[in-house]
Amino acid sequence: MATELEVKLTLSESAQSRAFEWLKGRPGASEGPVKILVNRYYDTPNAGLNQARAALRVRQAGDRYIQTLKTQGEFVNGAHRRQEWEWDLPGPNLDLGLLEQTPLRSQVDLDELALAFETNFQRRIIMLEQAESVIEVALDSGEVVGGTRARPLHEVEFELKAGEPAALLENALALAQAVPVFLNLVSKAEQGYYLAGIYCPSLVLPASGFSSVSFLHYLSQAWLTGDTMRLPASALAKIEPQVEAAGLLPVWRPVAKALQAGITVPTLVEQFPEFGQLQLALAAAG
Image (cartoon, rainbow, N blue to C red; front, side, top):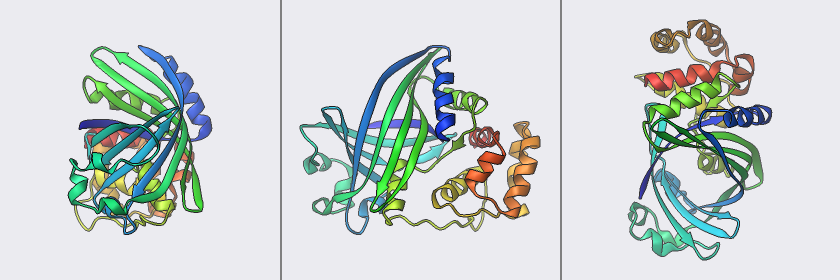
């Protein structure tokens, strides 16, 4: 078992192309191989795995097959921290025996696992070696397919391989200053579950304790569902002190007005290209 720490940004196709060129120019940058990845995710008919906040997939990369189990994990200091188990397979079929020694065994009936959805994309890798930190940056371009529905996929993921976690947000923020991005807490698996009709979140504010973290989760859910966001001034006022501490009040004020009036995430990012910087500053503040 390993622990994965990552920051994921969603962006447009054109912004992703610009991000690739920008990343290649970063200190300590080196290009890795380009891969075509076919990913098949599995669950039970009653979505038991999803209810257990975990995801199970078999990935084909060239002639290699990899079975991976991930927990949904937690959002800590701006990054996702997840538990992860990974095994090489001789072919494309699930090996249920490998799951016997994981928490999944006691949470779902392994014999009921079946294909739920797919995520298929091209991955370009850039490695960043900076001071004491090593970061793998993956630029994924393709689509998520669930049932008869599909949506495009354009993401940049920063994953810490060695060093201090703060380096993840520092590099993500630097990219956000170069191209418009959206800090996205929705995983590829959650997108697949949503398209397949298995995962249907409701866009609601927490009853109490609204914070920068709950705000970021709310934004990600709105991105997934496409719903219009309308936030009361009282909720937005709780975020403002952290925005002020980050020196981003000039960015925040028109954004706050738009959120009160009603706006979707794509329109928000289009109208306010600095919005990703704002999100990352809030993530860093916790």
